[in-house]
Amino acid sequence: MAPIDSRAFLNVDKDAPTWKHSDEVIIDRNEAGQNIVRAMTWYELEYKDYILKFTLSVFGSQPDAGFALYIGLHGGGQAKDYENNDDWHYWSTYHASSIQSRVERKPEMNDNEVKNSVQLGAVYVALRFANKTGTGKYDGNTWDTHFTPPAQVLMEKLVMRMLLKTPFTSEDASKNPSYTPSSKATSFVDSNQIYLLGFSAGGDAVYRLSTNLADRFAAAHMSAGHPGDVQFDNLANTPICLQVGDEDSEYDRNTYTVDSAFTLDALALRHSGYYAHDCYVHVTTPKANERAHNSWSAVESGLTRGPILTDLHTWRLDPERGQLSQRTMNTNAIDWVSQHVRNPLPRKVVWNLRTRPARDTEVDANWPSKRLFYWLYLHKDTDWSTTFEATFDAASNSFFLNRTDAPAELGFLLSEAMVDFSRDVTVYLRGDGKKRQLFGTYKVGVNEEIKKQTLDARGDDKLVYAAAIRFKKKTQKQADGTTREWVDEAEVADTLFTD
Image (tube, rainbow, N blue to C red; front, top):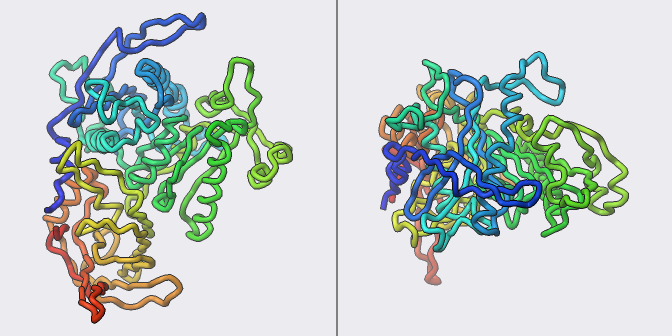
């Protein structure tokens, strides 16, 4: 069965965010430990029995390319409903001062650690995943609240909605965000400036979402989270910053964070020019009422400076000796991610199929799998747990499939910004340690159906392609009864999918 277009699956063009206001749902605490009620305004997107609630703050005027979008994921997770609401309320303003400062800052005022701001205006949304009834398979109050299968679907729905020119369509203008629009902007936000940030349980989610949906984000920022079994291959073109306190030993967050940085170091060494990352381990001296988990967060969320470790390899082997090497610097999360702008057409793409978003057909029998990643795609869905590495070269009008276990379900997406359609496109295959082998040459032209399909799949006009080349598999029965399969040929596709 052919995959359902994401726009149709998520009703992106139909279901606008619903405006909500409540003076009861958010419970906070004052310094005396007394419960107090916080009035709060937010929006909601729905999918089946699930809701994505999000606050939205606009800073500055809309640039011609659209606003930069910062997506914030609160901490908590495995907690009571009111506690997660409390964390969400706190997170709704957590990065506000940093974004406001960055939007207002003039380029000539930036110091060497804060590169020029590329945006004139920005939008900050803080997310809260919930079940409509508060119970069920995914109730919104678990450690993985931000990246359960329906939460990932709703994340995609949110991003695709924000890529529309007018995401909010309430007849009551007071319920729509107030901002000064650009007459040249074709989308509310700039798809090349979408940033993901999260703390604690939100940090857990940044690990997952940044790898599962790497082609969506310009950069990601993880604070005080745990990577679990995340694999980082997909982050070749998605810079990530990791921050943690040196004494944050609960669940071994501190050591797992550093080990994740070492994994990224190895990937960056193997793929020169890719896997941009930083890791900041904060030197913490928590006060009596503070936790090592978050005692340093003011440094990460503000424009202040704080001490960090500089020799992580020594610290990992001997924490006491590692404490001897320190420096003080600005580790502001917003400033770090804002250095980066997504390249929608990276020369090299690494796609680990094991890190595609999880599906749950019990929730929705038509649940589609992720089939497109930058300019790679699966023309037929597969359960293969493989990693594709591919590059293109504009000068030679060529594509190279560098490493794969079974590429037969794979295809290349082509645009005229990548290769010259008036010349033949050459495809080479190359296994590990082997010289490249010519696979074939192909004449491609602009295909309007493929342009439509690639837009519908992700709703991103910067990820629209005009042609596709897909591999084909040959199957042969062996004398011992087994079946042998191999890549036999490729062809120019007239439509994306073959299932």
